[in-house]
Every structure is written in structure tokens, then in C-alpha cells.
Amino acid sequence: MPSFQHKHILIIVENLPVPFDRRVWQEANTLKESGAMVSIICPKMKGYTASYEIINGIEIYRHSLPFDASDALGYLLEYGVALFWEFFLSWKIYFKKRFQVIHGCNPPDLIFLVALWFKILGVKYVFDHHDINPELYIAKFNNKGFLYKMMILFERLSFATANFSIATNESYREIAIRRGKMAEDKIQVIRSGPKLDRLKLLPPDKQFLKGKKYLIGYVGVIGEQEGIDLLLESAKHIISIRQDIQFAIVGDGTCFLKMKKLSTEMGINEYIDFYGRVPDDLLIAILNTADICVNPDKPTEMNNLSTMNKIMEYMALRKPVVQYDLKEGRFSAQEASLYAECGDTIDFSNKIIQLIDDPELRTKMGAFAYNRILNELSWDYEKEKLIKFYNLIFLLNKDR
Image 1 (cartoon, rainbow, N blue to C red):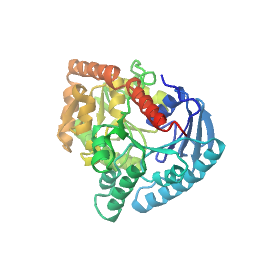
Image 2: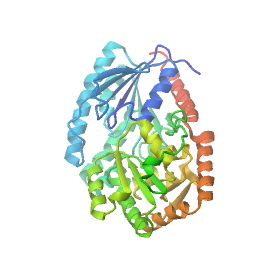
Image 3: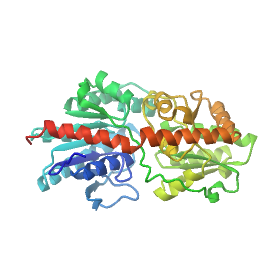
Image 4: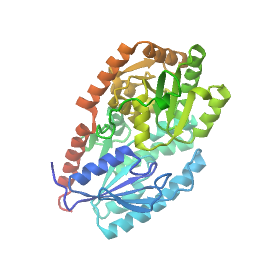
């Protein structure tokens, strides 16, 4: 393994705290284990409110955000506050211990505004492209007006500022080349592979079944584009046919209360448990109990081209998956999933019932899922790509 001793990497992430952001935390630990000093700037959120702490030798600086935005004006305020703190804390960290790389994780595509000042001093900027923000904007607000054009501009400027770029899948790599005008040799695909030492296989815990025979599990953000409303429609259809199935929805987001209210209005509360954001041990216990896990992401261009971490976490726990037929979702899961016609909640319901009624197929799909993660997609494979990529960065920056 290459040694990055005497190197200091600053990671900036705006939309989630660390270590809750699993991808960022895995990247940070991999770089730390390779000898680098790693500092992280991220927001404070529920459960992660310390302004400064050291975990695994990684220094984490957290800043406040005014609120969790849900509209365009709110996002403008949120991002403005985040940029202020990122700029202030970056200089504080730089004067404490000079860093050679800023590793900026979007959304939003605004961290380049911080990196620009440090590039004058020879610091390299790595743009870690987590979300395609123009498509995310359309998914949230359904228009291509002025703010959408600003998203396109910010994305382009992020790539123009970056010395190197990380893509989470081949679709994002293609966007970096086509829309970002990034040189192919400056882009590395590093998928968000799960760590198997975290996602341990455990016996089911019947308390989550709530007296039912089967459990359907979901974990992830609860926002507009995640399709929880579609999942509730499918659940209502299933419940009208049979009453032996419970649904466990784990996660939080801007639509959490809205979805709980919708569940009540639909009259299906008895069959739906909203757990909110939970500790890892509870999350893993729920997923281990699930017979089937679901990904009801709406068929938007954003979701079509994005790799969803939840799918690979399901697979790492040997779970068969039901999802809508989207490009990157199909690439990740392959034979571990059944694919419903996009947006068709009845078809989605039927796919769940098909798996409930076919335990042999569930077992076969779960085995395929686990083996694909174990042999192809776990973080053990992806971290080697990250190490080689940073070795190239430091080799080209060896005089600094």
C-alpha cells in the first residue's frame, strides 16, 4: 500500500455530517490508513453536534446550518451559510497544518468557490461528484428555469476548477467528460461499495414484524424524489389483498412528516413503521429481519443515472430487492432484483407479492446479491482505486 505520510487532505462535505455520511467516512479512513493526515469540514445535524472532535485520528470540524431547506430560497440561504463556514474553517485548518488537497463532495456544486483561493497556493482540488445537481434540481422543482441554468453553470465551474474528479459510476463519468469537459485521464470511477465488517449478517428479530409473518424493509432519505409516496401506494394495494406483511421505513428527510401524515390518511398506519434516523445497530437489525428490501425511487433522470447506496447495503445483507427499472439500479443489483415498470405502483406491489410467495427465489436472489458484493462491489475493491488515484495526485504534485 502506498504511504501518504506528510500529506494532509481536507475533505469538505455540505449536505451530511460525518461519520454519518458513509461514503465520505470510508474514503477518509482509507486515506488515513494510507498514512495521510485527514481533516473534514461538515455540517452539524441531529446526533452529530460537536463543533470539533477526533475519531480514528481524523479531525472533524462541524458548523451550524440555519435549517434543513426544502425550497429554492431555503437552499440559497443554507448554501450561503455553509460556504461561509467552509471558507472560515478551511483557513483555520490551513494555518494549523498546511494541506495539499481539498477533496470537495457535492451537493452543492459550490465548494469550488472555497478551493479557488487555495489553488493559488498550489493546493489541488478533487471534485467528488456524488449527485448530478441539475437533474436533482429538476427532480425537486420540475422546471428548467433560471436556477436550473445556474446549476449547469456551477457544475461546469466545479469541473473547470478541479484538477481531478471522482465519479460514483460510469454515467457520472460520462457527464464529467461531456458536460464538465474533464479530461478522461483525470477522472476515476469509485463506487460507494459497502463495508462488510459493518453490515453483519444476523438472525431476524421478530419484534420488527409486529405480529405479521413478513417484513418489507426500506432505508434511505425521505425526500420528494425517493418515492416513499409510491411505496405507500404499493403498500396500500398489498394490504387490501393480504394482512400478513409489515413495512419498516428507516430514514429521515424533508418529507418525513408529510409521508407519516399520508400513511395516516391512507389508513395503513397499522402496517407501516416509520423509524426515522436510527443508530447503525438498529438499522442492521431491521434489515436483517426483512424478507425483501425495496427501492421505490421515482423514475427521474437523476435517479436513473445515480447509484443508490441502499441497494448495495441490501445486497450485502443477502436481501432480494424490488425496484423500478432504472439504469444504474439495474447495473448494481442485476439478478438480485425484480424490476417493476417505472412508476407503476401496482406492478411494484405484484413484484413484492411474487417474492413473498416464492421463498426459493428469494434465497437464490439473496445469494446472488451477497456474492456480487463480496466478489465485485465491496469497499475492499473500491478503496484500492482511491489509493491508486491519490498516489497519482501526489506523484504529479510531488514538489509541493
